Image 1 (tube, helix red, strand yellow):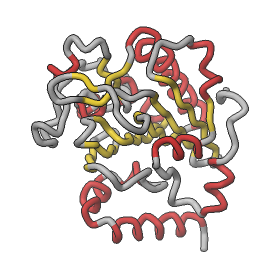
Image 2 (image 1 turned 45 degrees about the vertical axis):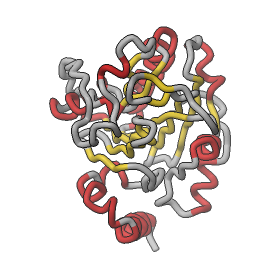
Image 3 (image 1 turned 90 degrees about the vertical axis):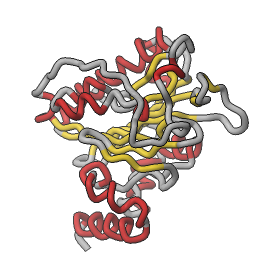
Length: 255
């Protein structure tokens, strides 16, 4: 069976076995082209990304975006319209008050700068459902921001990338902020897939101030992200191809 047909078959099978996810997945097929990383949480389809939201932790489980060279050509002004996601019931979502005075940034998983190609995509990137409590100086406003910038440069060079981002929590009790007890992750991951070359890059960074020059130290196999999160990336690929892409540790950041 040709690879393109196999991917389509697996995706359609996924839709048929996950009726609760059918609607959002059908609306956001471009982001689920290589499978969704997990089936837990509430699926939310947005203009520029697809995410699964954890109602207990009030943070995303994972967020996936598809970036293309064409989308990088448009550069709309950042909206800064931070707000709760009203598609999630009160008590299951983060509120602005939870972050106020917490000492943590409202850390985007799908970055606003990636959404500059469309006004709706830009606006929706500021839903708190797309964010986690993230260390600020040296993390959200440091190494993590620089990584996001590198990803955009890689999109410019490679033409198209799928980017998966989300939190990592240690087993057991975790720190929370605010009245709604928004969970603070111990680390953050980013998994990047080049669908044309079948190459992947993955990083796990502690949620604390870090030195940007140390970024290569946080490279890990995709399988390590799966081990720490329980997710399963690139499920639309045959198992042998997943093994080839996900097992090795990247020797360096992409150039």
